[in-house]
Image (cartoon, rainbow, N blue to C red; front, side):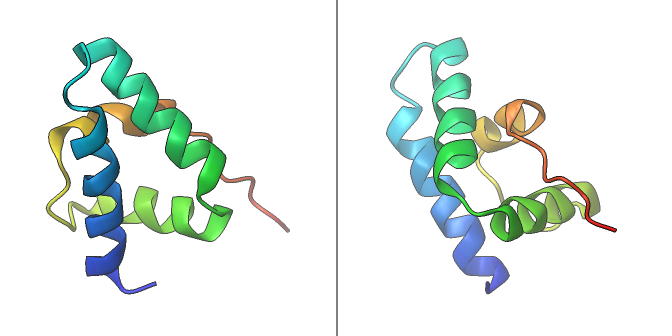
Length: 74
C-alpha cells in the first residue's frame, strides 16, 4: 500500500477515537487496527513507525505496542 494512504487511514482511525478518554482511545485504535487490518498492512505500519517514517497521529503511536503483531513465516 502507498505509505501516505496507510498513514491517512491510521490517522482517520485515531481521529475517530480521540474524543474518548486517552486509555479508551488508545485501546480503540489498537483493537480496530488489529481486527480489521490485514497482516501486510500491520507489518508496514510497524516498519514505518520503527523507521520514523510517516506523520502518524500521537494516538496511533501510543496504540502501536498494543496492536496485534504479525507472525513471521519461515
